[in-house]
Image 1 (tube, rainbow, N blue to C red):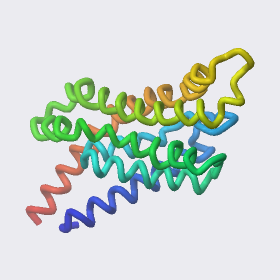
Image 2 (cartoon, rainbow, N blue to C red):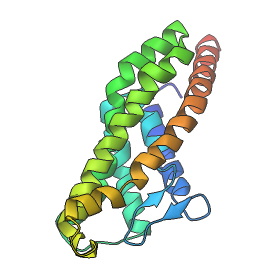
Image 3 (tube, rainbow, N blue to C red):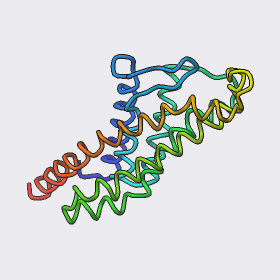
Length: 195
């Protein structure tokens, strides 16, 4: 594909589709009673964000949030919908803040070092954004599920720990996949330019 815009939109569409598939029951590790899951749904968003930047990552996240909503529509209030779906998944795109560092690591072929200096903080901040949105939503809209005497913010923070746990799995997968993907894409791009 020679048109960079078409290539970017295709990559985003494929990432959204892959995220949706990774969030389905056969590939989902565990589902929480009031929503939320332990899965690799964040991985494609983080990969696009690292490869393509902040805007592409946020767009991929927002579109993924919409796709997840349409497969499991659980909404108690319109603001809860915005916070739990487009906002929470869009914030995963914060991983794109490390796009420039990742691009430099690819250009210099220092990918093993970049796993710790780029992928780890990118996954941390992307997952932290999603976690924060879900904690706020849980405390405001789902506080009634908190055990008696437990503060709703603590309940929500504990309930949503599936996000940081999922982030650990996403980091491991990204550390394995991103170097391979970057080398394969660079080789393919060079072959296209020479051909």
